[in-house]
Length: 331
Image (cartoon, rainbow, N blue to C red):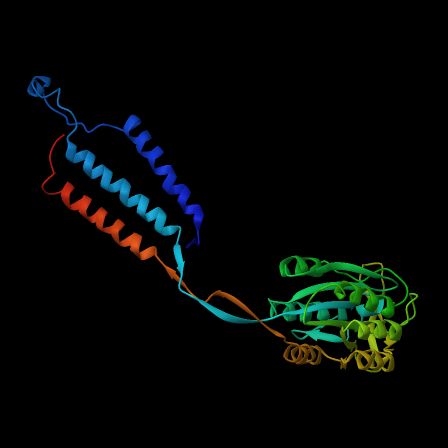
């Protein structure tokens, strides 16, 4: 048994207090007569049992309503449920070149960081049973979120991400940091999604060395080169009115290294030169990386709300009928 909305029980517990307050400070029934002498002989009468009974019916009905709103439920049986169980670390490039606006969202120009965050958010939301971690990097690598099943925490951190004010792109350090987040997790499948638009020119760890370490630990790496081919419209400064000043910057992705990193770990290299391409890449990875694990849970819950609401309604109807028929009298 369980209660789906247990806070409604507080209303049931408050009913005795409400009944006591009503009996102590509530207004008594009164009639207006032309002369007090007409009421001599019946002033000592006590409240009838009928009225007490009808009031009791009402309080019992309200208590049943409160308990019904608490939604008591019973498990209808256990059954095996299939769930995906993959641990995923995302390494996202936040170097200044990722501000290049060579993508579109809704027909408007968007920079690479905005698009990468949007596509990654959809990917995370589509895999509720997976554990995600997030590493960001530019000249150095940083842990934005440890591996967690609390996707709301992860997405809140991801929404705050902006370009890092650092020189260089430390791809090897980012990959090594992401792999270290996964090495001690006892999962059937562990993968790293590495997104970058540049070349490894910072940090002390070569990308291929980090790839060998990932392969030794059984971590598969998918690498994504993000950016259009040729040149990209990139903001380089702002004018006196706060408007962005753009220039065309060459797109320089080290695709050969990214291919080797993916190949050494059993992963795959992708090139994302548009928003739709990036979305299709994540859709393909989503289809490939699913490890089913079995858990036994309640397959269905039977709701007992009606079994409480029907008697409550019956008591209210009975109280109304009796108060207007056989027990319609004073006091």
